[in-house]
Image 1 (cartoon, rainbow, N blue to C red):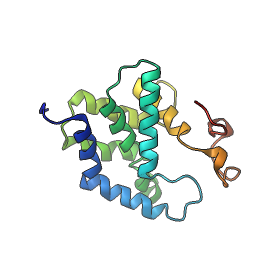
Image 2 (spheres, rainbow, N blue to C red; image 1 turned 180 degrees about the vertical axis):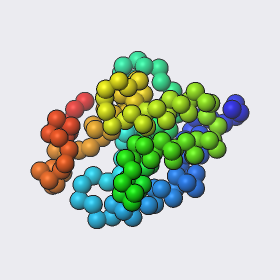
Image 3 (cartoon, rainbow, N blue to C red; image 1 turned 120 degrees about the horizontal axis):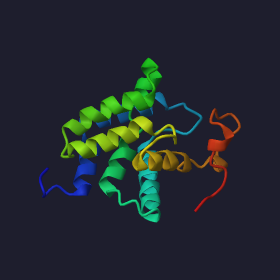
Image 4 (cartoon, helix red, strand yellow; image 1 turned 90 degrees about the horizontal axis):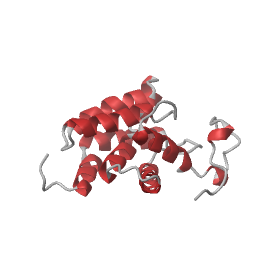
Length: 165
């Protein structure tokens, strides 16, 4: 990996990647009429920021660019789930792998990111990054403000029903 490529550049390389943009666009199209939470770039960034805060609070020493990469990519498989009934974490790992293969991340960093994406739907048996991703993904949703909260399929214990800080 070139030393002149900064963390910010690596994250923007994900954002600018044509495959990433294609899948984001598909997700937006497929969720246009969705009444529940959508999987927008704002959601991805909310998750990243919460992960980073939790990482600092817990003194986990996880690189900010690894956190942001995992957060930006964690739901990228949603269009595959809607279109082909492939679980979005499974589809997301494959898509993220294609994207990361073209970017300046080490093999170890790629493995960490892909593992977190693949495990982000459960808090059991995960590594620190996937546990952060799980927690931030849930806490990024403001269920307490949602008009559709009673219709939501999320179990009540996963719904974010109060402001936590």
